[in-house]
Length: 546
Ligand SMILES: Cc1ncc(COP(=O)(O)OP(=O)(O)O)c(N)n1
Ligand SMILES: Cc1nc(C(=O)O)sc1CCOP(=O)(O)O
Ligand SMILES: [Mg+2]
Image (cartoon, rainbow, N blue to C red; front, top):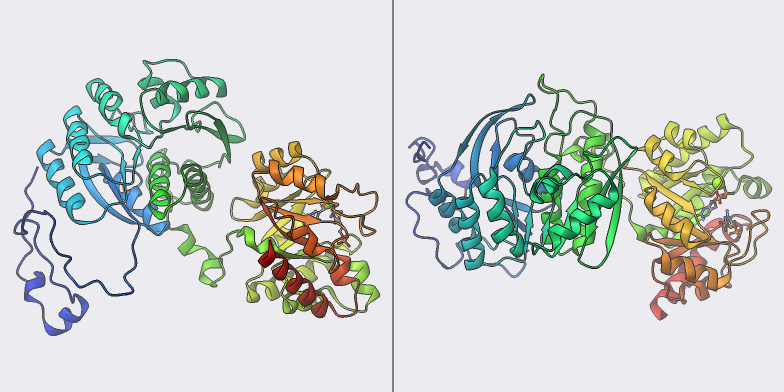
């Protein structure tokens, strides 16, 4: 390895001009001349408003093509709001074609880097990637014992996605014997899981479960076996195991060749979320969604001439919605006061859809659905476009009932579908991961399916009898309770809800119940804003009581 050279005099921060000093107000120091990084006072007095910054340390290899390895880890953590320091274990020469060369960093110098960061920089979570020798794994374990962290995420990188070997058999044994027992989660793909278990064949979800259980027995607290390499299906299914329960995590299989670095990214996202304080399952779910979204947004990007390109971790910075300052990510609390329009009622009261939506937002609706059953498509689309503008300028998500085509054409925030509409997984394929999908569910089985299909929330009703929807079975509080208890998704209650009974619905204090969806009690009234305002204050009072 070439040794680290000291900064040149021209660039040295110790010789800055007055204006450069303003840009770099804190003295920097060369790693060669700094004192040994034992506990020492912080460089600056910590102000009363000092903010902790979630910190992930990645211990991994450098990818010259910057799609995977250290480079992917830093970008992933940055995208999720965590600081990412890096200990480099190997320098690889690679690109979109494959790995052309690997140059391992000497063990002692990996140790020196680890000590520098761990002794000084309040690391929350360590994430490991390529560990090219048994010696490096051992040095890492020693340092982790000396400088304990909140969590250890181990991505057992053994073979690159292009098929090149990145760590040999002796490393495998050290992984299993020394590193896994310290890990909070291990995240092998099926090829890695098979290698770890002596080349067992993994062909089915049931094989993945057995593999997760066998790896769990090696000592980590959680295992995620990633099924992205399993034979083609519309889903990318991963199996999560916490020692008690297996959870299948379904994701969208994005059709793209820009998948280089997905494993590193997923593990880094898990680490970033853990550093921010998430539970393990939540961290895994967020990470999976992030990778799915990044692949979706990068599917048509072109860089390099090889078969496997990188993807854009910072896609949200480039999204037109972000540039407009209104990137909508689904927030379940938005379900609090869900206004669902009805063309017949608005016509009866002589108002346009647009005016109805404006009034609902003025009164405090937190999400709006256009449910226009008898409006001609062209008229509906025009109205929907106007409503998108109104909602976006108020930061209120706008969903379209049933009509995926209209939602796409007006760039709405999502779609609500029922059991006889297009299945939610097909809606997800058409809308992509960034849009909100709601599904009407009356049973736990339907709620389970909605979750598998990639929905964001469920609408559950009729809580009370309604005249707005014909032949709608009434579930009552008991039916609502059964679905809420079974649901893995946030729930909004619907059906016959009005200012007289909304409080009693929220006071049930049901898990997952985030709010109420209302049609006639808002829109079959003279003043939509007044009704919405009254309902909002009733809901707020009920929530403060329960
Ligand atoms: C929030 C919410 N929940 C349930 C429904 C009902 O949807 P669906 O069963 O598809 O019936 P229609 O609304 O299409 O008649 C909903 N629209 N919104
Ligand atoms: C559209 C809809 N879906 C329901 C369900 O149970 O899934 S009940 C319903 C109608 C709700 O209208 P109102 O607030 O006027 O009762
Ligand atoms: Mg429908």
